[in-house]
Amino acid sequence: MTLWNQLQLLDSLYLEQVDQLYDEAFPMEIRQYLSQWIESHDWESVASNVSLATLRFHELLNQLDEHYSRLNLGNNFLLQHNIRKIKRNLQEHFQEDPVHMAMIIASTLNEERKILETALSTQVRLYVDFNVALMSQFFSVSYFFLNIACICVQNVIKEIAKALTVAEQIQLSLVSEELPEWKKRQQMACIGGPPNACLDQLQSWFTAVAECLQQIRQQLKKIQELVQKFTYNNDPLTLGKSQLDEQALSLFKNLLLNSLVVERQPCMPTHPQRPLVIKTGIQFTVKIRSLVKLPELNCQLKIKVSIDKCRKFNILGTFSKVLNLEESSGCLAAEFRHLQLKEMKCSNRNSETPLIISEELHILHFETQLIQPELCVDLSITSLPIVVISHVNQLPSAWGSILWYNILCSEPHNLTFFLNPPPVKWEQLSKVLSWQFSSVTKRALNSEQLRTLADKLLGHEAQGDPEGLINWNTFCKRGLPFWLWIDGILDLIKRHLLNIWNDGYIIGFLSKDRERALLSGKLPGTFLLHFSETCRDGGITITWVEYSQDGEPKTHSVKPYTKTDLASISLPNVICSYTLTAAEKIPVNPLIYLYPDIPKDDAFGRYYTSLDGRFSLFNHSFIQKKRG
Image (tube, rainbow, N blue to C red; front, top):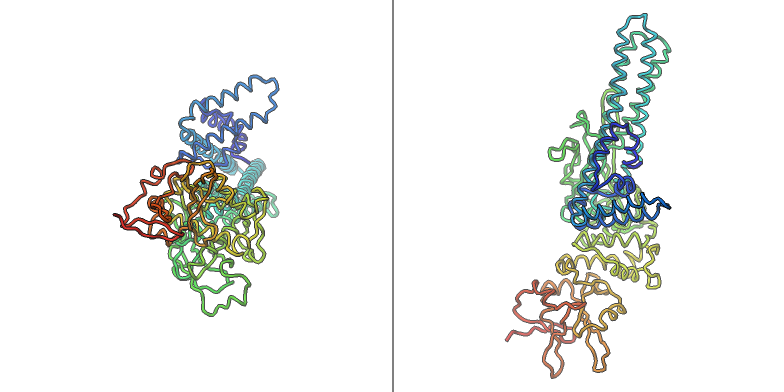
């Protein structure tokens, strides 16, 4: 149930508070029409990003248009007028400042959550405190009023039962809906997706339910003290109270069992953008958090970490930590900062699994025990599957496995996933591939680049079908693996091409036909930059167009520049000083305009650096020429 729908169920007192949150600039009608869409976005993150705020503003207008088109307005001229007026007001107030709109929405949602939390908490407390107070007064009456007192106690028991029913419903929503959704968002964030937020909000909800259950248990103890003065064998009142005791305790235990989360998945500080891949002998970090933040739990839970037994590892470092309240965040957490994995020499992995190392999945287990009066609970949580490597050159293949698993699987214990890995839809894979670029650079892949990659994986005849299936062998194992080719390009960009990629000067991925189509009709000397399809470790090539005497376009490409080449001379310097030398001709630089028509110095001039010599190319080989 959406937050907005929950608010509609509140008493008029709280609805009046909700009403005060909205005005003409951002009217309540928008909240009503687009409630689900509005709540599906993290508006605090949107408010901190102008580009994202602009995008969300236009999406909101589109959502409003779609809602308008779905309505059967008929001759309802007034409703038509109101919807058009709302849209005009939005454009008037926020067209030039969409960040302000995002801030308003973020603030409004926070206030709505506070109103809902206050209402729920007040409802439970009113049920318990008010009726227990009534019961205490009645028990002070003489024995002659025993029957009346018993009736009142029964009413209190009924109200507590209602409060427990409400708590159970809220807990079910948290455990079966909100928490799994957060874990899925975390999976996507681990592989480059949008940052995962809302954990603080989830903690506040878990803690509020836990506090209410603890208060109910305390009130039931007070009831027990009162009824002991008047009870008798097989008293139905005592029996009913015992059932509520058991229910409250059961709900509290279940909440605790689901309260531990891995806030930050295992990650080596040396590779922060590639969590879940751990190299033996290298330190990694992981953070555990309790969503139930009660004072009595502080420093009471000692978390121990272990690893599955598929391969035999020793965990080095401090492998047990106490959950305590962090001063900076105020959350109940334990962070393991200096863990290492060391493979035991006696391990014989070849006899245990047919999988290669980069396909072997492992999980870290985190366990603790809570012991309190009338309560003993074993708590545990596992990390997302990790891949353990022994050499850094295994990292790209291991990261490919992490991508594939987290796209397709949300079951953390499926360690045999790669014995028979399912195919992935292009619609899913394309999004994740784009994330790999946006997480390393400031620019994701555009639709044309993704279409070229789709043709490479699915074939041109598939026409970039979103439902087209790619199997694991094609992605990461067969021939020149597609993923290792992409990873080599990512590393090339990160090391040598980051600025010009962020500037949008690299077209990136092109077929031969598309390359010719783009350059045909352009000025002689127009060139474009795209990645080589044959360099495993990443290569970038330059293709330019010239015209024959009869006007026929001819395209020429240079041998791809690799990381080794670009370590000696930057690509902007190559473009600046690149020359062709033909027999009896003066050397000439054929590179004049960056596609579509940008003078090369305008595009790359700020990246030129002085060189000891100029470089020219003859038969695809570098020739260094001294400056005269």
